[in-house]
Image (cartoon, rainbow, N blue to C red; front, side, top):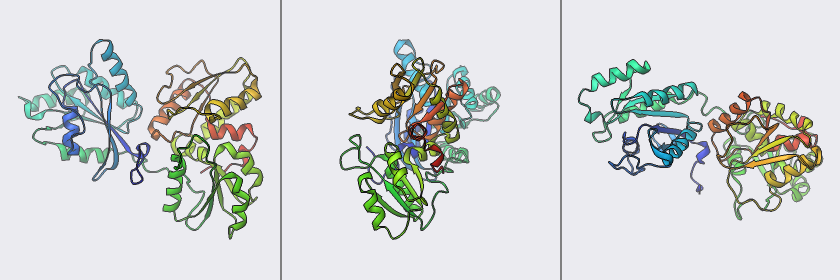
Length: 398
């Protein structure tokens, strides 16, 4: 659980460490952080599932370090572990690949994989304290990949500072560029948040998109008012001015649209996160596919979080009901959650994704790229509801 003073995992820089079994990944992470983050053992394959550690690192800020299983794992269980390691490659912002042993073919494969995915990748020769002829090994790696690797030793702390400096240098230029509300509001603007607290929200707490949006508005020094949908009219009466922007839950889009001041711009948390985490123009174009759905069509609804669905769940009940009312009761709808996102999407006519607040932008964009590459239309919850209810053209985009 994220505490009040923690940065959500989805907003942290994700750094993945990759290498063969017993290549020193866990030891390097422990040396890098100065903490016992991962279990270290001489037994190959100690790290099975990816281990994540959220930290604040001087010079880098809020990070998530990911210790992965060896990509040379063996057996049926080993293949499953490698699959989990492969999944992390879709989420990371920077990769650190550890070269070890005489055969470096696997390391070269993964190095090239990250290059193809346009992920900044840092080659590292691990366990430098144990190398008999370090210069020759470094030359061998450089000759294979065309880049000189760093030499590091977790035992002697050789190269740790250099690795940190290199990671800072490789942080993508646009990593911190997007904001949630964009240019929709600025200092001094009055912003009204209409936030119905449905049964999916944990009792006594706001959901993550609401919390993150409020924090950004406070940082922008906006004037914030908030209410539930049933108190919207009373709230508007008490305000000294007309809100420049109203942000609401997509589930009450039509109600807020019909009852807001004409001068106020309207958007939703889901639409804001569609731009913040994904590709809003692509989602808007993808929503047009809703008009072509029929009883022979197939739709994939992809939730990012894994919660126990309750009555009137937006992704499992409300949106399917809206779609079937429009396309026919026989419309086929598959629902996945968490990271269970299919490799092959070609059997679907449309993919509808949630806001994606639980994942970082890198992972959401990897899903979008997969849909684009397979020519499958994709949109998200908020854009879907706005399109179906006919108010999409009236929705403000950041």
